[in-house]
Image (cartoon, rainbow, N blue to C red; front, side, top):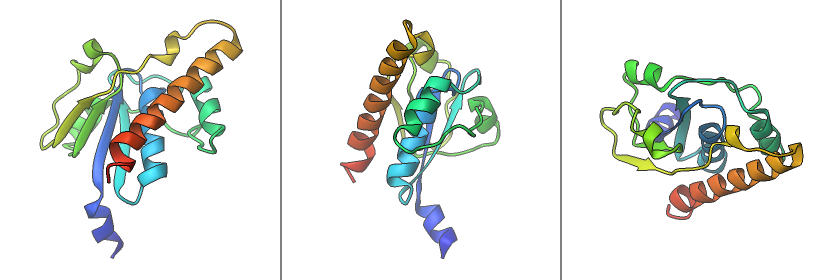
Length: 148
């Protein structure tokens, strides 16, 4: 019975440059808010390390991504993974470097600011990261929660 439910979930891949912030937040939000209907993963063009500010602001919403690993989109591509949605959350020039996945129903581009470029005091960076987190959450709600 569980396999049937698992097979019916729509698969979503979020991609950004380093898989350290934006795509990790989007994956966590979709799996938390609609895990019964969607199975989200995330990956990056050049996997890096998790952004500690992102980990901190996600914990504020009781979502712990601190143990997540960054992953390569090209590894997913080589594995032949298939998705109903592939969503880039980086700038347009970076998104154009993403591989084309076979069988993708929808390819979307949601450009969000790169938190690794946020500047200022610790509080300034946290505020900007919270704003980014909230914008990603709102986009997930608009695209996947309110429309279903």
